[in-house]
Image (cartoon, rainbow, N blue to C red; front, side, top):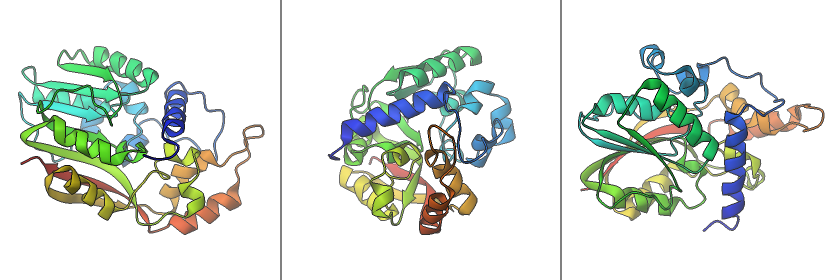
Length: 276
Protein backbone atom coordinates (compact mmCIF):
# COMPACT_ATOMS: atom_id res chain seq x y z
CA UNK A 1 0.00 0.00 0.00
CA UNK A 2 1.22 3.50 -0.82
CA UNK A 3 2.14 5.37 2.34
CA UNK A 4 -0.24 8.20 1.41
CA UNK A 5 -3.09 6.09 0.02
CA UNK A 6 -5.99 7.94 1.62
CA UNK A 7 -4.45 11.37 0.99
CA UNK A 8 -4.08 10.51 -2.68
CA UNK A 9 -7.68 9.31 -2.97
CA UNK A 10 -8.96 12.45 -1.22
CA UNK A 11 -6.90 14.71 -3.48
CA UNK A 12 -8.00 12.92 -6.65
CA UNK A 13 -11.65 13.05 -5.56
CA UNK A 14 -11.42 16.78 -4.83
CA UNK A 15 -9.61 17.56 -8.08
CA UNK A 16 -12.10 15.69 -10.26
CA UNK A 17 -15.05 17.15 -8.38
CA UNK A 18 -13.68 20.63 -9.08
CA UNK A 19 -12.99 19.71 -12.70
CA UNK A 20 -16.52 18.56 -13.40
CA UNK A 21 -17.97 21.56 -11.54
CA UNK A 22 -15.67 23.99 -13.36
CA UNK A 23 -14.22 25.48 -10.16
CA UNK A 24 -10.70 25.95 -11.49
CA UNK A 25 -9.94 29.66 -11.68
CA UNK A 26 -6.81 29.64 -13.76
CA UNK A 27 -4.20 27.47 -15.39
CA UNK A 28 -0.88 27.66 -17.21
CA UNK A 29 -2.34 26.36 -20.44
CA UNK A 30 -5.42 27.70 -22.19
CA UNK A 31 -8.34 25.31 -21.77
CA UNK A 32 -8.93 23.07 -24.77
CA UNK A 33 -12.06 23.76 -26.82
CA UNK A 34 -15.03 21.54 -26.01
CA UNK A 35 -14.56 18.04 -27.30
CA UNK A 36 -10.88 18.45 -28.24
CA UNK A 37 -9.61 16.29 -25.36
CA UNK A 38 -11.99 13.51 -26.34
CA UNK A 39 -10.92 13.71 -29.99
CA UNK A 40 -7.25 13.56 -29.02
CA UNK A 41 -8.07 10.46 -26.98
CA UNK A 42 -9.12 8.60 -30.11
CA UNK A 43 -12.90 9.10 -30.35
CA UNK A 44 -14.29 9.59 -33.84
CA UNK A 45 -16.51 12.49 -34.82
CA UNK A 46 -19.37 10.05 -35.39
CA UNK A 47 -18.99 8.59 -31.88
CA UNK A 48 -18.92 12.04 -30.26
CA UNK A 49 -21.83 13.36 -32.29
CA UNK A 50 -24.07 10.60 -30.91
CA UNK A 51 -23.34 11.52 -27.27
CA UNK A 52 -24.68 14.24 -24.94
CA UNK A 53 -22.38 17.28 -25.03
CA UNK A 54 -21.74 17.10 -21.28
CA UNK A 55 -20.32 13.58 -21.59
CA UNK A 56 -17.87 14.79 -24.23
CA UNK A 57 -16.88 18.02 -22.48
CA UNK A 58 -16.20 16.21 -19.21
CA UNK A 59 -14.05 13.46 -20.68
CA UNK A 60 -10.64 13.29 -19.01
CA UNK A 61 -9.38 10.13 -20.67
CA UNK A 62 -6.16 9.30 -22.51
CA UNK A 63 -7.57 6.85 -25.05
CA UNK A 64 -10.70 5.19 -26.35
CA UNK A 65 -10.90 1.69 -24.77
CA UNK A 66 -13.98 0.88 -26.83
CA UNK A 67 -12.16 1.39 -30.14
CA UNK A 68 -11.41 -1.84 -31.98
CA UNK A 69 -12.79 -3.91 -29.10
CA UNK A 70 -14.91 -6.95 -29.81
CA UNK A 71 -17.77 -6.12 -27.44
CA UNK A 72 -20.86 -7.98 -28.62
CA UNK A 73 -24.62 -7.49 -28.14
CA UNK A 74 -25.90 -9.04 -24.92
CA UNK A 75 -22.58 -8.85 -23.04
CA UNK A 76 -21.89 -7.25 -19.65
CA UNK A 77 -19.27 -4.48 -19.58
CA UNK A 78 -17.67 -2.97 -16.47
CA UNK A 79 -16.05 0.47 -16.68
CA UNK A 80 -13.51 1.27 -13.93
CA UNK A 81 -13.57 4.95 -13.02
CA UNK A 82 -16.46 5.72 -15.34
CA UNK A 83 -16.41 9.49 -14.76
CA UNK A 84 -18.98 11.50 -16.71
CA UNK A 85 -19.89 8.41 -18.71
CA UNK A 86 -18.53 8.79 -22.24
CA UNK A 87 -17.40 5.15 -22.38
CA UNK A 88 -20.52 3.91 -20.60
CA UNK A 89 -22.67 5.39 -23.34
CA UNK A 90 -20.54 4.02 -26.17
CA UNK A 91 -20.42 0.56 -24.58
CA UNK A 92 -24.18 0.61 -23.98
CA UNK A 93 -24.79 1.00 -27.69
CA UNK A 94 -22.51 -1.93 -28.44
CA UNK A 95 -24.13 -4.36 -25.99
CA UNK A 96 -27.66 -3.31 -26.94
CA UNK A 97 -30.86 -3.67 -24.91
CA UNK A 98 -30.08 -7.26 -23.91
CA UNK A 99 -26.66 -6.35 -22.53
CA UNK A 100 -25.62 -4.28 -19.54
CA UNK A 101 -22.97 -1.71 -18.70
CA UNK A 102 -21.85 -1.00 -15.13
CA UNK A 103 -19.78 2.03 -14.16
CA UNK A 104 -17.77 2.36 -10.96
CA UNK A 105 -16.62 5.73 -9.63
CA UNK A 106 -15.66 7.08 -6.20
CA UNK A 107 -16.57 10.71 -6.89
CA UNK A 108 -20.15 11.81 -6.18
CA UNK A 109 -19.98 14.71 -8.66
CA UNK A 110 -18.86 12.39 -11.45
CA UNK A 111 -21.60 9.87 -10.65
CA UNK A 112 -24.20 12.63 -10.73
CA UNK A 113 -22.90 13.88 -14.07
CA UNK A 114 -22.91 10.35 -15.48
CA UNK A 115 -26.51 9.85 -14.36
CA UNK A 116 -27.48 13.07 -16.14
CA UNK A 117 -25.80 11.91 -19.32
CA UNK A 118 -27.34 8.43 -19.13
CA UNK A 119 -30.78 10.00 -18.74
CA UNK A 120 -30.05 12.42 -21.57
CA UNK A 121 -29.06 9.54 -23.83
CA UNK A 122 -32.27 7.66 -22.86
CA UNK A 123 -30.38 4.46 -22.12
CA UNK A 124 -31.91 1.81 -19.87
CA UNK A 125 -29.04 -0.67 -19.81
CA UNK A 126 -26.50 1.38 -17.83
CA UNK A 127 -25.94 1.45 -14.06
CA UNK A 128 -23.42 3.51 -12.08
CA UNK A 129 -22.25 2.34 -8.66
CA UNK A 130 -20.18 4.22 -6.11
CA UNK A 131 -17.05 2.37 -5.07
CA UNK A 132 -13.30 1.96 -5.27
CA UNK A 133 -11.68 0.16 -8.18
CA UNK A 134 -9.50 -1.61 -5.59
CA UNK A 135 -12.63 -3.10 -4.00
CA UNK A 136 -15.26 -3.37 -6.70
CA UNK A 137 -18.94 -3.67 -5.72
CA UNK A 138 -19.33 -6.37 -8.37
CA UNK A 139 -19.89 -10.13 -8.07
CA UNK A 140 -17.24 -12.72 -8.88
CA UNK A 141 -17.09 -14.05 -12.44
CA UNK A 142 -19.91 -11.77 -13.59
CA UNK A 143 -18.69 -9.55 -16.46
CA UNK A 144 -17.57 -10.21 -20.02
CA UNK A 145 -15.44 -7.08 -20.40
CA UNK A 146 -13.54 -4.70 -18.14
CA UNK A 147 -12.71 -1.33 -19.68
CA UNK A 148 -11.08 1.76 -18.18
CA UNK A 149 -9.86 5.09 -19.47
CA UNK A 150 -6.83 6.69 -17.82
CA UNK A 151 -7.90 5.69 -14.30
CA UNK A 152 -5.79 2.78 -13.07
CA UNK A 153 -2.73 5.06 -13.00
CA UNK A 154 -4.57 7.10 -10.33
CA UNK A 155 -4.78 4.13 -7.98
CA UNK A 156 -2.20 3.94 -5.18
CA UNK A 157 -2.88 0.17 -4.98
CA UNK A 158 -2.63 -1.08 -8.54
CA UNK A 159 -2.03 -4.73 -7.61
CA UNK A 160 -5.44 -4.74 -5.92
CA UNK A 161 -7.02 -3.29 -9.06
CA UNK A 162 -5.47 -5.99 -11.23
CA UNK A 163 -6.65 -8.70 -8.82
CA UNK A 164 -10.17 -7.24 -8.83
CA UNK A 165 -10.23 -7.27 -12.62
CA UNK A 166 -9.39 -10.98 -12.56
CA UNK A 167 -12.01 -11.65 -9.86
CA UNK A 168 -14.97 -10.05 -11.63
CA UNK A 169 -14.25 -11.35 -15.13
CA UNK A 170 -16.00 -14.50 -16.30
CA UNK A 171 -13.85 -17.34 -17.57
CA UNK A 172 -12.90 -16.21 -21.05
CA UNK A 173 -13.66 -12.60 -20.11
CA UNK A 174 -11.53 -9.82 -21.55
CA UNK A 175 -9.99 -6.54 -20.46
CA UNK A 176 -9.17 -3.55 -22.65
CA UNK A 177 -7.97 -0.42 -20.87
CA UNK A 178 -6.35 2.82 -21.92
CA UNK A 179 -3.84 4.22 -19.46
CA UNK A 180 -0.69 6.26 -19.00
CA UNK A 181 2.67 4.69 -18.24
CA UNK A 182 6.05 6.25 -17.49
CA UNK A 183 9.41 4.62 -18.07
CA UNK A 184 11.00 6.87 -15.46
CA UNK A 185 9.80 9.67 -13.17
CA UNK A 186 12.03 12.14 -11.31
CA UNK A 187 11.45 11.84 -7.57
CA UNK A 188 10.17 15.42 -7.40
CA UNK A 189 7.36 14.45 -9.79
CA UNK A 190 6.69 11.02 -8.29
CA UNK A 191 6.25 12.65 -4.87
CA UNK A 192 4.13 15.58 -6.08
CA UNK A 193 0.53 15.07 -4.80
CA UNK A 194 -1.10 17.43 -7.30
CA UNK A 195 0.41 15.56 -10.24
CA UNK A 196 -1.44 12.38 -9.27
CA UNK A 197 -4.64 13.88 -10.68
CA UNK A 198 -2.72 14.86 -13.80
CA UNK A 199 -2.07 11.13 -14.40
CA UNK A 200 1.69 11.44 -13.92
CA UNK A 201 2.78 10.82 -10.33
CA UNK A 202 0.99 7.48 -10.14
CA UNK A 203 2.10 6.15 -13.51
CA UNK A 204 4.15 2.95 -13.50
CA UNK A 205 6.30 1.50 -16.26
CA UNK A 206 4.84 -0.55 -19.08
CA UNK A 207 6.81 -3.58 -17.88
CA UNK A 208 5.47 -3.23 -14.33
CA UNK A 209 1.94 -2.87 -15.70
CA UNK A 210 2.26 -6.14 -17.61
CA UNK A 211 3.89 -7.87 -14.62
CA UNK A 212 1.03 -6.75 -12.36
CA UNK A 213 -1.58 -8.19 -14.71
CA UNK A 214 0.32 -11.49 -14.97
CA UNK A 215 0.66 -11.70 -11.19
CA UNK A 216 -3.11 -11.26 -10.88
CA UNK A 217 -3.62 -14.31 -13.10
CA UNK A 218 -4.51 -12.66 -16.41
CA UNK A 219 -3.25 -14.10 -19.69
CA UNK A 220 -2.74 -13.19 -23.36
CA UNK A 221 -1.54 -9.73 -22.35
CA UNK A 222 -0.92 -7.41 -25.29
CA UNK A 223 -0.02 -3.76 -25.80
CA UNK A 224 -2.32 -2.96 -28.70
CA UNK A 225 -1.58 0.72 -29.10
CA UNK A 226 1.08 3.14 -27.89
CA UNK A 227 1.34 6.95 -28.13
CA UNK A 228 4.46 8.69 -26.79
CA UNK A 229 3.61 12.20 -25.61
CA UNK A 230 5.29 15.20 -27.17
CA UNK A 231 6.23 18.48 -25.51
CA UNK A 232 2.84 20.16 -25.95
CA UNK A 233 0.93 17.14 -24.65
CA UNK A 234 3.14 16.88 -21.56
CA UNK A 235 2.69 20.59 -20.86
CA UNK A 236 -1.08 20.15 -20.99
CA UNK A 237 -0.87 17.39 -18.35
CA UNK A 238 1.18 19.29 -15.81
CA UNK A 239 0.58 22.95 -16.65
CA UNK A 240 -2.56 23.44 -14.58
CA UNK A 241 -0.75 22.24 -11.45
CA UNK A 242 2.10 24.76 -11.75
CA UNK A 243 0.30 27.96 -10.91
CA UNK A 244 0.20 30.38 -8.04
CA UNK A 245 -3.25 30.05 -6.45
CA UNK A 246 -3.46 33.78 -5.70
CA UNK A 247 -2.05 35.36 -8.85
CA UNK A 248 -2.66 32.54 -11.40
CA UNK A 249 0.88 33.08 -12.64
CA UNK A 250 2.33 29.95 -14.16
CA UNK A 251 5.69 28.71 -12.90
CA UNK A 252 6.92 28.48 -16.48
CA UNK A 253 10.53 27.62 -15.65
CA UNK A 254 9.43 24.62 -13.60
CA UNK A 255 6.97 23.60 -16.31
CA UNK A 256 9.75 23.68 -18.90
CA UNK A 257 12.13 21.85 -16.55
CA UNK A 258 9.68 19.01 -15.85
CA UNK A 259 8.60 18.74 -19.48
CA UNK A 260 12.19 18.36 -20.65
CA UNK A 261 12.83 15.65 -18.05
CA UNK A 262 9.73 13.67 -19.09
CA UNK A 263 10.05 14.00 -22.86
CA UNK A 264 10.09 10.54 -24.43
CA UNK A 265 9.44 8.81 -21.11
CA UNK A 266 5.63 9.06 -20.80
CA UNK A 267 3.06 7.52 -23.12
CA UNK A 268 -0.48 6.20 -23.30
CA UNK A 269 -1.14 2.54 -23.98
CA UNK A 270 -4.13 0.39 -24.82
CA UNK A 271 -3.68 -2.85 -22.88
CA UNK A 272 -5.55 -6.09 -23.56
CA UNK A 273 -5.71 -9.15 -21.29
CA UNK A 274 -7.91 -12.20 -20.83
CA UNK A 275 -9.04 -14.46 -18.00
CA UNK A 276 -8.55 -17.99 -19.30
